[in-house]
Amino acid sequence: MAVPVEQVPAVERARSAAVRESWAEAYVLLHEADRHPTRALTAEDLDVLSDAAWWTGHVDESVAARLRAHAACVAAHDHRGAGLAAWWLHHEYADLGRPAAAAGWLHRARHHLEGLPPGPEHCFLAWTDAEEATARGDHAAALAATGRMTRLALRAESPDLLALAHHATAAALLARGRRAEALAHLDEAMHAVTAGELSGVFTGLLYCLAISRCRESADFARAVEWTNAAMEWCVPPWTGRPGGGTPPLGVTPSGENPFRGVCRAHRVEVLDLLGAWALAEAEARQACREVPVDRLESAAAAYYAAGDVQRRQGRLEEAAASYAHAHELGRIPQPGLALLRLAQGRPEAAVAGVDLALVCRSGPRHDLLGRARLLAARAEVALAGRDVPGAAGAAAELEVLAGDVPLLRAMADTARGAVALAEARPEPALRLLRRALAGWLELRVPYEAARVRMLLAAADRTVGDEEGARLELGAARAVFERLGAGPDARRAGALLTRRRPPGGLTAREAKVLRLVASGRTDKEIARALAIDEHTVTRHLNDVFAKLGVGSRAAATAYAYAHDLT
Image (cartoon, rainbow, N blue to C red):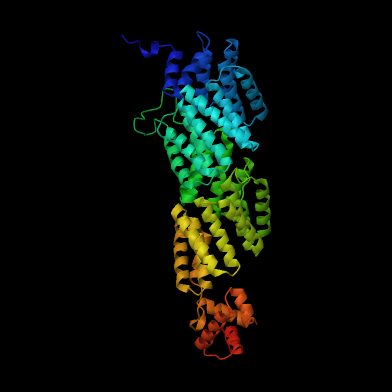
């Protein structure tokens, strides 16, 4: 005859709930058992209480329970258990922004495990070794440490540890610049994650780590796929997911997956790039409410992304406030703040801000996308200030950084195309900008594609292709209006309605006429437009024929009479 549930001791029911990863239920049961103990909780029970407290948002209680679990292991001379508890305390204190306490517990973890035969617990120390080696640039030591992780995980037959080892190997390889090998290891780790083969803690941990790696390495396709998968996984089991049912007894729907806010913050950046701006801003606000106290950098990222949306939509005061919130939480709000200053008509402040950020973020291997965005913004603000050499320098560094990474390649082609246009080299500009447009369209990043169309329109008009320019401007305006990018839409509209040159002149012929009216020689005009003198002569003959004039003086008089100077 089955024993009624209410007669099963609370601790045993809590253990069963933990096996099912029903952490809210486990927390309620163990918390009550700990308040009114019929017997003391074991080290194993305290570990479960620590995990359950963390999952339900009681971070301080989680640390307190882990400290008690460590003490219980020490009292029982369980050095392996004490070493593992000490490592997790190191990890938790690091997340809480207490580096001294974290370092102390890492030292204690090493002390407990020193001299013991290698076991699963040593896998965590090897992970720490790999991260420390990568931070100091010792790539060989980092890969040696991840090799130890892999061997220990295989010996332990632990899917959790093996997936973690693959991720750590990917991180070490990325730091060394071996991108293809790194992504193969990352894919292997994420296969286990998305297949549901791992425990909840490692599933959430690896989603966070992998999405961060994708962002840092500018792998947009993987970031989209895994961010969406992470958010699906984060849905609480009682919120309508098939088989969800109702919340456990004593738990309200606010007891959500603690990774939810962090994953949502990652998703905001993806939605921003995809052009889902209204949803991105709403998700950013929600992420800031959900992010745990030990993950405030995710809230900072969400505020920053919201600021980018607001800036592009012309909501400059709101954008300034969002960037200020991001700064308060520890993030350098660049290059968004520099582009905001540019929109406010403060180019000097824009240049100063982005230059300082480039100095602070000098390691491109650590965050490819972050540095690439700074360089792209540096080129943009330099061109706005007519500093073409400065823009060319930033674009050249971006070109080196881009390699064959699609997102970075589109950014580099855009910057180099804009510089070529400013240098009056329309043919190279058109080639680079058309390649950039193809890249942005393939990545499905509409705002950047529309911005490239604006540059293409200018290049088309430079070579006299008015119809092509109008097609690009029309397409750009439609995208800007759909996104709510009001300032850009108005600029595109103004360029579309710009008066055509009089007398049937093409845009290129009108430009030649303006230069003639300014007193330039054929040689100077050829240099300014990056064409040969024979082409200048041909354009002048066409101008004279269309206007019915026979001399440069008469053409100049026509230019003044029709406001072409």
